[in-house]
Length: 123
Image (tube, rainbow, N blue to C red; front, side):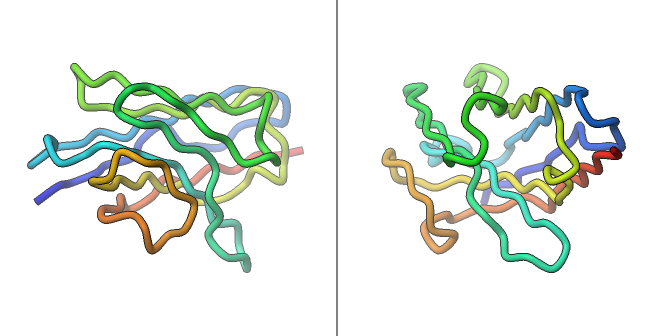
């Protein structure tokens, strides 16, 4: 079994920076691709970015240039740095992981999920 725990969310002003973390534990050897999703109030959960075990990254067009996904395999932790935060970034951010080494966008492709961390950006 795998457990994913997000942290680092909070209330920040527009223009600020946040670094979210996702710590993995359990049978982590099965984890290859990891990803971040977010769900704003009243909206569907959307894919934000993904990173393979080899460090290949992919981003949603809407976040390119402001979001940076990374992972430290030695620490079993994935990160999402968000620069120049905007009010529209307000959402619950979830980390997800899948056994496949290929990145995916669809929620159904991910095998494990965290509980989420709230990010609120004030204008």
